[in-house]
Image (cartoon, rainbow, N blue to C red; front, side, top):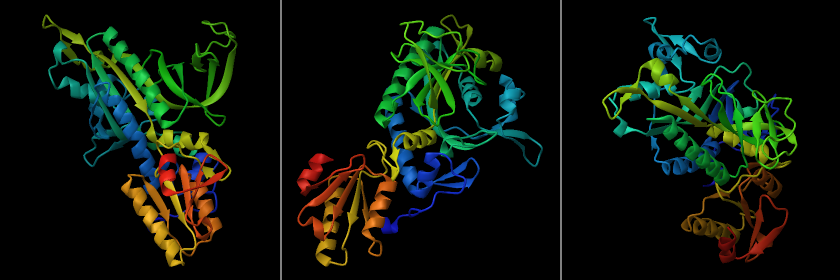
Length: 413
């Protein structure tokens, strides 16, 4: 991709009122744009990152037998009334409700448990049909009292939500543990170290649930944990009298963190309230055991920037970087240099390497290097009069540069 054709270009100044690192760098580098408080446009760079994150999630969930789908975002009141959550005061605080010209009431999706349960109820399920595992990537709407922390806490955001239906609690918990392992692999591939933390169920369930937390000094959550990995709880359910790990006896520590995923064992709460059953071996109706599992890809993008940055800009992990190589051409008025850069650009593409080529001729070397650091691609490759028959290569997360030929560059990246 030619950077001269890319939209938008970088900005020199931090956006007004930006406090979070992800807000400053993602806007300045051209990944996102704020429409209003809590509402963000994913620009081409940002969309490429989200697509990489989503593909990692997709590959891991598919291995569990889950099937991808897409559900509506506008929901009729009647379905939410069946579960009792339409009139739940806690739900009412965050749900957007509206009416059409015929005075019919609707809401915008903040989650999809009711919609999936309604879908299951239309298909006359027997025990032979279960388990069923369905997931989607969709927009969610939540009326956050104070949307903040850049793209990490919005009123409109992208969510991957997975739902599983089972014949028994045992089968539900078995898949629950499978998804927990899948989530750990997802975050490992993305490049994040996460802690699995026990938490309360909030507006979803009265059972304890699990969150996937990334330690972050600027995070909104407080986690109590054992450094041996034997214990971790969210402050909502933590007993302040507990000072030693109940498993290994190590001291309990506290740290700020950010939630990037969660899983909920919902039990039969939704199926019983919405009267959605399956037929057992004897032809009798039995309530469906249900669970849901969420990851916020846009929030993941935000926390990646919070964790991986320096005073110059973003440092993307290779697995989710929008491009792998930032090719910087200098002295492009010299036709020989320009030809060499363009040849290198084409050869990298032939090798299947995603490359962003800064082909601008009216920009100083210093500005090009500053843009490369701000955007944060894993490898910067410079070609100029100074590099001769070599390529000047620098990893974004390293200080030193090295001079390599093209074959050595391919081996390096």
